[in-house]
Image (cartoon, rainbow, N blue to C red):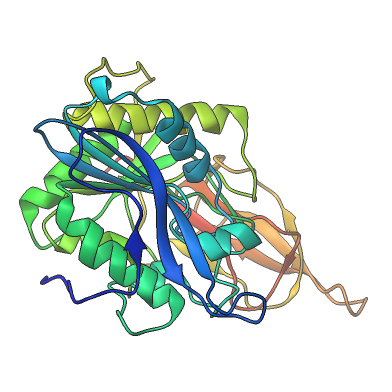
Length: 335
């Protein structure tokens, strides 16, 4: 896919072609009531050391996901240029307005950044961030990794994933990077809505792309931090830009998310009662959850059943659900 490299209103305070470790910001003009000439300041780090591949690392695509920002902030603050052969561009909080607000979407324009790519140079603030990342950072990169978790409303088993692209070589290299990450589970990405996703703009441009779903619930946990830190390290080693040994991890379990029927959608509002835990084995027809009417007593709970044999790979985290919410994602073992 051709990339839109038209002029942008976003400027960078760091150079991309100088050796060393450089910290700064991407400045997005934002005229508002309390700052007529204000700007959104998106942190960025560029670590460069001579010739070699360029890796673009992004986190905070959704503002309520914290595993990626935490690991990438730590990386940007500790990595030395001498450890690198090539260049690493780190954008830990890509959707900075949403990250600052702790929300999935931007408080400025309600834009969902990961449904806004490749963006527009003259669009909303969210679209302008997407345009800069896809049109001005992506052309610099040979490889891309974007780190996700389930945010405040979802919880996933820790998994690294790749996608199916038109270019089979890109697909194979993306899958190899997902396996190199070393998460407990590895899979191919299957989403309910892929329009405007960063994954398919980056991968569709010919760059191998790996992403993750590492827990969620709007926080971080020690075991997930360790998985994320090791995974970032291992993928950078795998792509030849980090001159260190990989961190040993247990073998990943491959799982498959069905193209259809993998998600369980709530058909009512109510209070959810889980009958299985995240990661538990499930069998077709098994009742995995009940949704209880909380506004009117004397009403029978609605039962939700597994549609396959496998495991519960994702669950809705808040106790209250609404009609149309995806309350579960199921996966089969292997694939």
